[in-house]
Length: 388
Image 1 (cartoon, rainbow, N blue to C red):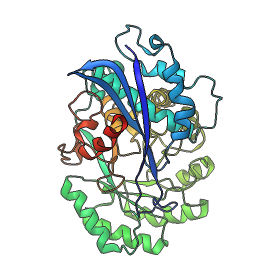
Image 2 (image 1 turned 135 degrees about the vertical axis):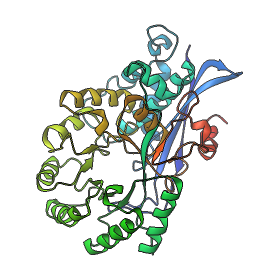
Image 3 (image 1 turned 30 degrees about the vertical axis):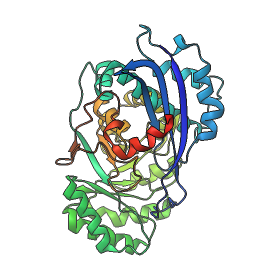
């Protein structure tokens, strides 16, 4: 059993949307395919991966360092102890050989792309949906057959007013979502309050709405928004300040009773540990949004979950950023709170299988071996280009 080829491509996901910090007019994504010599139905088994939105493509790092290391490795060094499947943890160690600690901003994304493809490959060879493979390995066979998801949207568009925002939110409810998230911090506080109140008129209660500042605020502004948001009793107030400003986050946590959410821009277990140690996060109230696809993949995410357990955190307080199928399987297999979803943006990478409905704010993971990319036609149109 061996890897026969690894291909990567850069795919644009350009959009006119913006949050409080960046626009997405030049955004790109790396896609990879890892082809094996394992044959199923007359074709070689291929694992696919890509990086989550918000970070650009990683072609240089992939081609110069990580892909060559996997291809040059002794094939047996990539296999499980039984020798009947690939071992993503062993592959992770090979990819990270001769890499210094620290410096997680881009390297972690490149490794995460390949890690996703390796888990897709391993689950396909096992003949199981990834979440079932994870449940067997790490939860004694337990899995969540239905996973909470929320619809992330509410971006700032040119000329988009509150009526258009309400119309967008209504489409999510019509799809079966119960909880939604919108952006704040890209307009004045008064304007953001009007947007929040307009959405509340649609969803009916604050607990159905989360807001996300994308790290825009200094402490003064973060506290000002917290005071204004308190009466709405929101689902959460996300990433008020810079993700590495643990002092700001701790001060905010002391000042508000609102649930806080952060972590999507922390890319290693040690960064996550520093948030828990110094960021004031409250394990019975707040949410952690580490994105496996941006933070060295599932191999590292498993270490992060172990760290959280040492500090008294349940995996049920974790709800990954990214809105992709990989995180959905991780949520179902490892017993997380749930998963993000992007019904209208970051296509074809956002969202789930074409015929997998959302019902009462929950979704069932794909029931096919691997991650289930093959059930999403527009995504497979891009992934098929890797070997054609």
